[in-house]
Length: 366
Image (cartoon, rainbow, N blue to C red; front, top):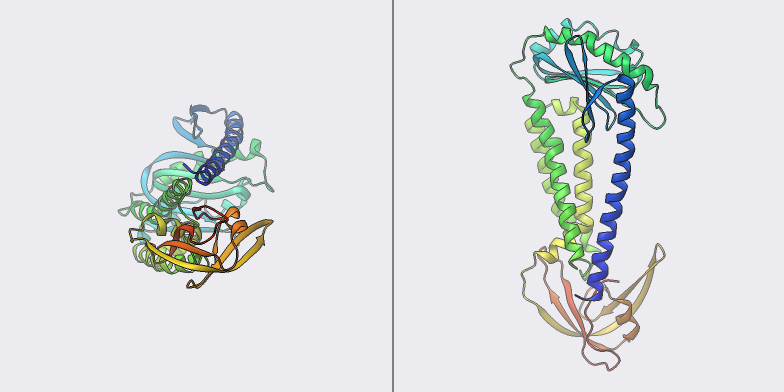
């Protein structure tokens, strides 16, 4: 294995290990915070990770999850989807449901809705949802609003105990939470799965030495966007057709979908297309002999980039520092070029053709 490939592998491993270590530290801090909340409620821990505890009140089990925010849930005799969400802009509560006739009956039967904003913990209440037969209450604590868990948690638990019988008396919705499951898959699970797959694939390709050899590297993001945007737009249209207007009325799912698709598009445009263009390339090699016309050094973020321009190629390309130092204008070089899976030509090798200053050198990015 060449030195450059070893360096790229070590660099990729260091990034992965630092990412893993930071996530472990964050997880330990969140675990400590979760166990503190369990202690306040006097709940019994039944699962370590993600942390889950249970508390029995009046023969009803209340489960508490306190890893990201805090969620208290219990099982109900009714079944459907009825959500009360806090709008992050107006700070008011919005009500959402899919089954219209069932939802109107629920709004009439649930007497606590009107006085919900006056509840002592309502400032940190993120949502109250009947999802299937599970009634879930979520509290959010931020860096700037840590609240008072010693008061909020018992009050929230008491509130859930109070309203659970009202949900028990609701009829079962024929639609249930089937539309909500479709929204979760379309807006979260499928985009996130694709993004994670792309991230891991890119990590292994970078470690294996792929990428960074496109001749006209300024064309990479442009082509990446041209390839990604039609797919992203098609997926958005599919999501809106499948979910209907409910996607617009459900800001959580829509914002998650847009954020994940934006990350995926950006990552693919600036890195993924470069890696896959080389990895999937099955084109034959083409050898050309040309002359060096210009040598250029550019700096960005305190890093120097060494570029060489040659005859018969529309743009300059990056080379290693060792190659740059030994090259002179007028030198003949032999380039081994491949067409690329997406039409982005890249250099497999750069060899000296008529210079005694250096042996054959493999092309690598700076």
